[in-house]
Amino acid sequence: MKKTVLVFSLLILSLILLFQISSYSINSGNLKMEFAVAIIAIVFFIVGIYINKKSLHKSVVDSKEINHKKISELEITPREYEVLQSISEGLSNKEIADKLFLSESTIKTHVSNLLVKLNAKRRTQALQIAKSLQII
Image (cartoon, rainbow, N blue to C red):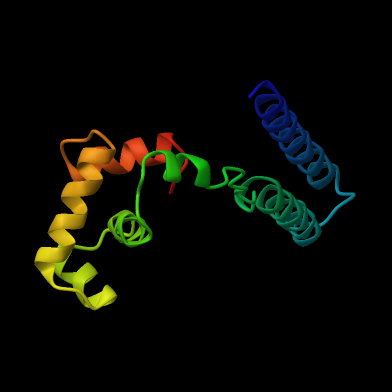
């Protein structure tokens, strides 16, 4: 955080300095207005590219791997795990049933089993627990 504040402070300071130098050059007659505007535009362009590369395109690396051992400890079946993944995608029971070619009542049974195995009261709570256990 301190580094970011320092970088932006230096950036603002350098831009103010650039404006002052260009103002002095224009007033003294050594520099035409068009050149000053062009130089300032180029500096802003370079700063924009720098900020874009450094701050906006930080790749999010998800270092969490799925804990298969925990899945087997909780005795979650492969089909229940598929249902859990579909829940994490935000699908409803009907959509999960269509996706997995099962009946909606079967999906409800799998969801109920997951809630019991994860000791959760709701689907959202089951997802939170699953994420904390690193199984999704």
